[in-house]
Structures are given as structure tokens and as C-alpha cells.
Image 1 (cartoon, rainbow, N blue to C red):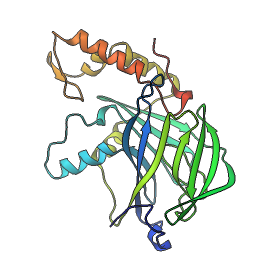
Image 2: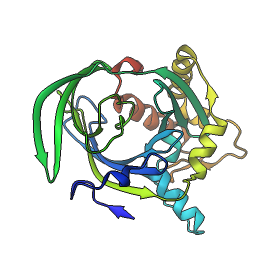
Image 3: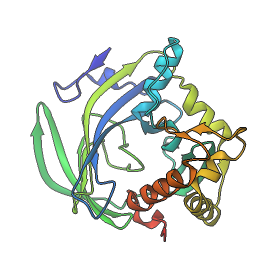
Length: 272
């Protein structure tokens, strides 16, 4: 049963805690903080009885296609994405960072000190209340709906007395907007997310940072580790061989350095 979230107020029974609820956000953000160019992607927030997962929609598409024996697009971003997961009521988050064939598991304690305001607005039949916070070096504004009784939101944002519907920072680097919801009557499995969790290597922050820097210094060598043969393919379909290896390596380094605008500026790595 699929619903567009902001159409009508749904009955309290729809939000039963014993089921899985999938919330889909439009995420508009700047990959390059020095540019005004915006990128738009969809992310899923799956609220299960025992955990909450936040991930790029490509994981859902890939799992659906593979389950139906259909090849998924080469430009799917599974190998350069992040999965965020935590248990209900806990502030310990597991962040699975996929660097091609390496999966880093970074554990962080995350919370926001929200300031609730009396400001509200109507969006369709929902009454949204405004809250603000400082998190990750940015000033954030959230609009949440008490009618949706989950203290969750996109990425690691949580702790408000209702689901976060809209969220944006004051510099217009990120904007999250809830666009759809689905109630899932059966347990949800995703082979790619499950595999990332099973193979993720717990990594302290300093080790995490040094691994990311090592990846930046020579992306091709990092990716090539464990691959046999002189040629291989990148996640975007680029064929790498002896003739173009240096060129591709420099292009990847430039991209990593340029597109360095994490939600949490405290986790920003200085690539030189």
C-alpha cells in the first residue's frame, strides 16, 4: 500500500510500531560547497521495529532488479554510498561507508539539541511545527509532524516529537523534503544493505580518516587491490587499463577533493 505522505491525515493505526514504514525524501544538496550547482537524489528512511536505516534509493532499485533477474544500471552508486543505521531510542549510529570494494563502519554518538518554536504551518492536512538546532557545524531548521509519531528524520536527525518532514540548513547546502510514505506488511530485506552490514569493518575515527586519505591518494590502486588482471571497471562503467590508469586516477582524485561537502562538517576530511 503506497501513499503520498502529504495528501491526508492518516489514521493512527497506519503508524503501528510493529510494522515497517518507509519514508522517501527528496534530497537537494551541493556536492561542491564552492558551487551553486545543486544535485537532487532520493533517499529512503526505513523505520523497522528493531532498527532504522537511511540509504540512497539506488540500493532499493538494485535489490529489486536483482531479485527479478534484471541487470541494474552501471551508474548505480552502490559502491560509493553511505548507509546509516541505529536502534530505536539509541543515539549510537553505525555509518557504513562504501569505498568500492572496502566497507568502513564508523560508530558515532549523535544527538541534536532542538529548540522548539511556536511557529507552525499547514501542509495539506498536516500541521507542521518548526524547530531549530546547531549540528555538524551548520544551523538547521526542521518542520515536523506530530501526527506521524516517529522521533526520526533523514540522516542522523532525530529526537523531535514527530517525524521530520522538511529540513534545511541556513546556507542552502542541504534540503530534505519528505515526498512519499509506504507501509510494508512484510519484513524488508535488502541484499546489498545486509552485505554492507555483514562486511563492514569497525573503524575508529582516526583510522577511518587515514583510510579515506589513502583512498584519495591513489583511488585506482585502492580499488584495484584484490582484483586480478590489468583492467577492471569502475562503478560508473569506466573501463580502467594500463593506458588510461593515470588519467582516471587523477580524475577520481579531483572529484573527491571537489565534492567534499558532508552533512556533518566535523567529519570533513582535508584533501590536499
